View 1 (cartoon, rainbow, N blue to C red):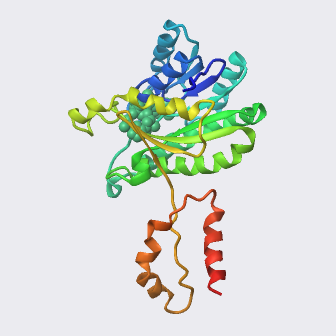
View 2: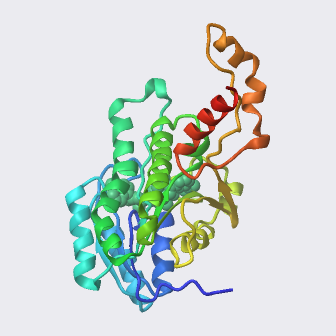
Length: 302
Ligand code: NAI
């Protein structure tokens, strides 16, 4: 078993003032990484803010002999993310890993949800990750090495009542990961998604105490360490909670060519079971696989 070691590496973890991010920052530092601990320090709904959350974690890291710097900037501020990347470069000369972990909740059923709450959640989760990655990407390309982790969620992958904004944002991060992993491959940049389940302030009211007891946030960290380590995979969605790890995939069924014509809609309806048949599932390498399958079957049908 080879040791996952971050000696000489520089990592930025957003939302690292508490919850999962704090433990991720501590674990990266413990294994040798120099860590930028970013956290706006607000409430679960994103209101308020203070740099002290990030500063406290930096103190913890330093007290254990590690190297860290704090940032109280919001991931929604692109210029602040550019400045944060520059600060890390000025201090430590490189950026190896980005952990896009910052997040908020504004839960309500879709019928009752304000568009402002929808936009804010997209802004923090999706644009927050875009801002940090955009700022660091040229440096990762230049050094031909990068590890990027998006924090997705079971809500994005599978849905959850009252979380349409959060689910849309979290699934958008999967889409971002799919293309960035393709674009980054030739420059040694690997991009993955982590879908955690953990007892943090975000979940404390949502799950029963006996379940939360099993879901220690530290049990997610080993998955994170693998996904940003030297031997990381790329384009993986790793589900992690309570020490259990599983993978989620975006699959496509083999499908069926039903052709066109006036009754094609009825033929789609009649063939629904065969169209849905998962025995020929694949995980496409990129988006062109869908078109290739469609045109290939059309040509085979004559
Ligand atoms: P948390 O609320 O303890 O951590 C989120 C952190 O992000 C907070 O410290 C908060 O201050 C920070 N943050 C919020 N907005 C920010 C901004 N604009 N800029 C910088 N920092 C900001 O909750 P938890 O559970 O640790 O969440 C971490 C990530 O994991 C989030 O992305 C969350 O959506 C995701 N997640 C958590 C799950 C769980 O079961 N706890 C389940 C699925 C996903």
